[in-house]
Amino acid sequence: TKGMEELKLGKTVNMYVCGITAYDYSHIGHARTFVFFDVLRRYLEYKGHEVIYVQNFTDVDDKIVRRAVSEGKTQKEIAEKFIAEFLKDMSALNVKTPDYMPKVTDHIRDIIQAVQKLIELGYAYEVENEHGKDVYFHVPAFESYGILSGMSLEELNRHRIEPNPKKRDVKDFALWKSAKEDDFKAKAVFESPWGYGRPGWHIECSVMSAKYLGVPFDIHGGGKDLIFPHHENERAQSYALFGVEPVRYWIHCDFVMIKGEKMSKSLGNIVKIRDVLKVYGGEVLRYFLLTAFYRSPLDYSEKALERAKNSYNYLKNTLINLDMEISALKSFKEDRNGMGFDPSSFLKEFENAMDIMNTPKALAVFHSFAKAINRNLYDMSLRELESCFDAFMTFSKVLGLFENYERIPTLPKELIELIKEREIARKEKDFEKADKIREKLRERGIILIDTPKGTRWLTKHF
Image 1 (tube, rainbow, N blue to C red):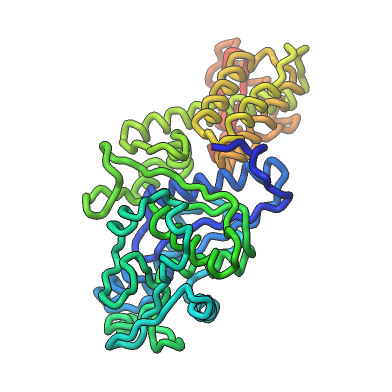
Image 2 (image 1 turned 120 degrees about the horizontal axis):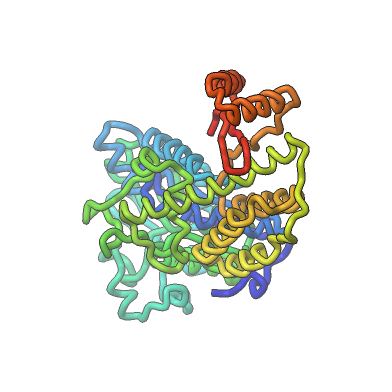
């Protein structure tokens, strides 16, 4: 893990993250990946970089075709449905919209041109079959294949999943697939020099990353499961096409584990994002996803989510208490001498953690800061309180928390007079009058909170 200072990044950072294959609802493994890269983007922006973020959608694929056929729909209908659902999930998780979200089907011509070039350069070849022609990338033609995944020749031979006796080598992978019966049923076919067909999985990202970011670009991200074969194949294609190492830094997120096992459909332990959102909401799930270092597995359980919920609520309550105190001092036109509290040391610790994208450490610093605020809340001056609020929101913005927080208002003089009247009534034990004033303010959207230091307030949206 390199710190940000060690990465040779320019003012503009070009980042490409592999998106979903749109054939089903997205799960929390997807959520972990996209929340992490969203935080990386936010932190780079915080450090002064302009980030150009591209995240693709695979909208034509074997799984999409199978689902389309089984449901009597087209590939386009299936893909559009699950892309829309994915975007809803990402919005709930406060994931910022990428600058570009290209789809495979919008780049068929570009993909065909890339495949033709690979054939011309001697890296790919055509194979005749009953449906037309397939095109394969010939792995032995690319000498440094396997460097990204670190696999030996024996391991590479063992991991292939595209059997075809006409392939020149077991490791060769499809760049273009001739159309089968189900492809026509699902309307997932495109004209090409090799007949009707559709792209192989890997070529799409080589083509789209180059189109939107150029080659080489800075950061290529995705889940750990994409290292092989997807990113290994993508690197080979791109290097072959452009003659340079296509990516400066490859970054991968580890898996979400359930009871010590990776989530997978075969085990039946997939947890959909939307199912967690119904119970915990987007920000609690986002908080949970940041509680493990990105290169370590994240253990999912109800207990872990409950711990995340409690930790998140502690931060949220701290923010509210801090804002209430600021609003009260401003509204009552009061101030205190202060105690010389300065959040800069916490900000520095936070940056040290984020420089290596150690989000659990960053959250720990955030909590230490929150405890210091709560401990000194009634001793800090207005200037110190506002400085703490700014720092709190800096942490929040980088981590993508409290995105929709609304400031507690400073109250006008007539409402402050009512609050003072109520405080006198309470001291005189005239609780009927105090309750009437409370209700009057409630009708104006102001919820009164009695504290040892006097009356504070919230607005109804809390």
